[in-house]
Image (cartoon, rainbow, N blue to C red; front, side, top):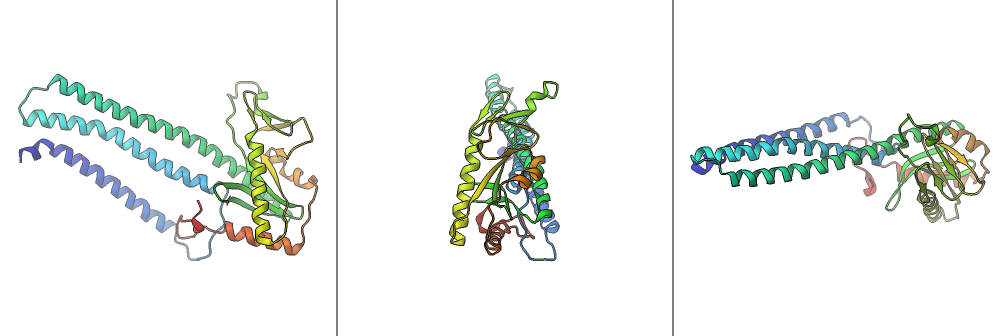
Length: 304
């Protein structure tokens, strides 16, 4: 009984915390189920940045959990010490106080470190999501000209941001977002130079984006060829939302601002496909991308 009296504040606080977290989780599930239970059963197409949006949701839950722990942990340690010394009728020991303080500050420092790490990660992911959303909205305008556009295509171990299929061929579009420096500085920092091989910013160079876009286009070409039984040429495009692209060479794949899509697809050299082949390609892409169940956030085919 004495031990229970010593630790009963801790038990109460932990119980309250557990009940709060359980109640929040139940409410979240109920709200999600109620808001995502439509009257139709057809699976939906993936939206721009769909996988990033899901990562944002998970990060937000993780950040909220860290905040709860940072608030509740000092209370648990403090109530444990107060209960112990009060019910044992002992004077607080300086050694115990120092050890408890060190443990408390170490745990809080660990939680705060992970909290800021998650906040920084959320900032980067949100930038990528908003960039993908902006690019997706621009690409969707191409559907007025007969193109089909697919977003967040789930490949083997990666996602292709956007795929465009139309009279001029098949295109894999890679969106790359990057933070600009302060607006108080020169406008030149919003300009990126492209020489056909790499991207040059004011403070960095980037080879990887071009290589990544080309590798994804090559993978998509092989995947489509395996499904259609005929070779399909897929061209890579890189888009940089918020950046002005200064091109210094005619070599290399297209690198454009999303606002240049209309002009790019108007003047790009066509690699036409037959209507039968276009239909086959669209069906193959549609089957892969239409994997969003309307009554839940679960993706079919095991993809995120």
